[in-house]
Image (cartoon, rainbow, N blue to C red; front, side, top):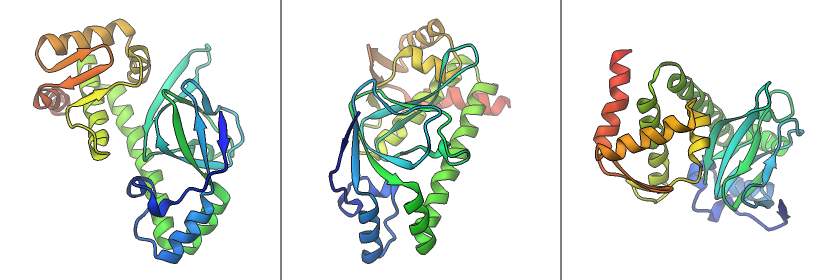
Length: 240
């Protein structure tokens, strides 16, 4: 892990609409720029923070891809989420002032460091910033509820279909293709996240490919029939 004291300016970042509000006045944005004073680079496989580490900051993903992981009672690593550029890491540490999960880089990545005590102070001064911090927290709650729905009521093919659609949509909002993506995570990591065995993940990918819904070449995935994926997910909702 490599810490760089490089000036970071939200005002000139092309991701600011995703992680920091655009409604701030120029003087307010300048104060936010002064708050976010460093970037941190994390090499592939490196840890941004580990479970049990003291909580001091939130981290806005500037580039790269992360997974969050918790260790179960029997020593297994359970993937709890995947985070891409424009998303915020570290919210898990707010409740107990220490992190409850580990954040691991799936590729070389860079984050902006947001010291939480200073962010709290600034958000009390600027209602726009406070509102956005609350929105970030709410977004995480909604995401957790979505994962619970995936694990609680969907069959294997429904879980994988929902996962692919939920992954390609935010990628598209960041300027990437609506139908093509390179998976940063392994099949095993996908299975851990979705509560599926590795063989089931591989078999479901193969089934989707055989049915002409997707094209798969190692980690490259092209969605050939997004309507078919959506129909698989909607079928589960209709049954429930």
